[in-house]
Length: 397
Image 1 (cartoon, rainbow, N blue to C red):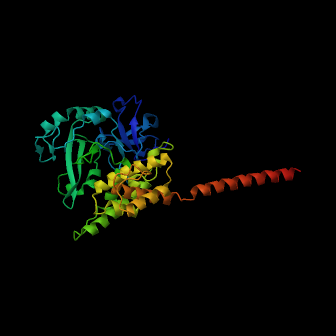
Image 2 (cartoon, one colour):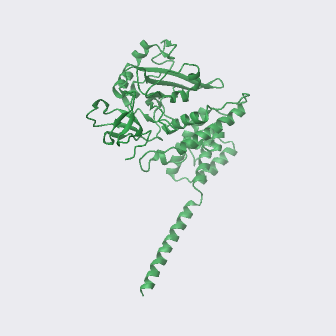
Image 3 (cartoon, helix red, strand yellow):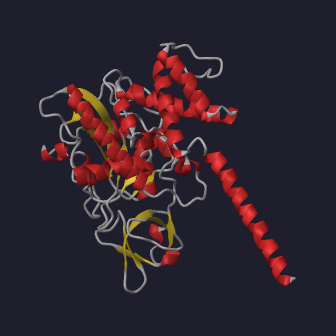
């Protein structure tokens, strides 16, 4: 088993340090004695473990989950240019989580703390007690603390984020949050975090309990912000120029995500499927359409997700890509928003445009004559085998 720096591991069967068993850490490096130096939340320095006491955490980085499950993000490991990140993977946490950004939720009427940008400790500890008790048990934290932040662009809210961290941690500093929210860092409102922290985002959306972004998508955001700077903004405030810059940023995210490794499972559907939501954004055509001022980005993402499901349904029904594409183009040219009998699931023009882009991208990846080429190659292989057998028979004679 190869354990590279940045690999998330779970501790097991440790006799000398039984308090670590069942908890997680991140490999920083392999030591000369063959052991591994691991970053843990409960120690200021790396803790050494034998390979037999380490189990690799291998969840699929391209799997879409509920955003309220949250991801645990570990301190930066030298030589690893994306965060070591894992799903919390605990249904108890998901059930116990209360959305702090919901105006009509459990925090309604509570006061916020000026320093933490969160709710005052008394209210937070009362409402989130069950959640924080699980964090203490699961992660070994002493004093769970919440921090909230809102990001926006051109006067519009883009994301509301809830961060949980251990206020008393003595582990190495974690600067990934500084990378993500450099404006908050420069303003002095970002807490100093040691060890791991939990990130729960997209809490401002109406469908906030529906997962949309995978671990690899989140990693691509952190990488882009750390090595390419903040999301570009038009100097003159021109919305058309801003859309072009956003499209370019979207392409960059897609390319970074495409370069990230998938999971360790063979034939993983999430890792091997073509036309995934964030893969689409890596192409200029999709990025241009997503940031088109004729609709909001949220509407575009919803339409793309729905169109992906529609295409999978049509594939199962045996509808060929080129046939579906022709029907969709004819409907679009005729400005007909009513679904055809052949394609009954398309609900509106936006989904129609999204489905056209998906099919066009699919046909680029899989040429129309691919099946014919495959059959031709098989015939050539069969012919070569037959000639080889005949030649051997002739030589024997």
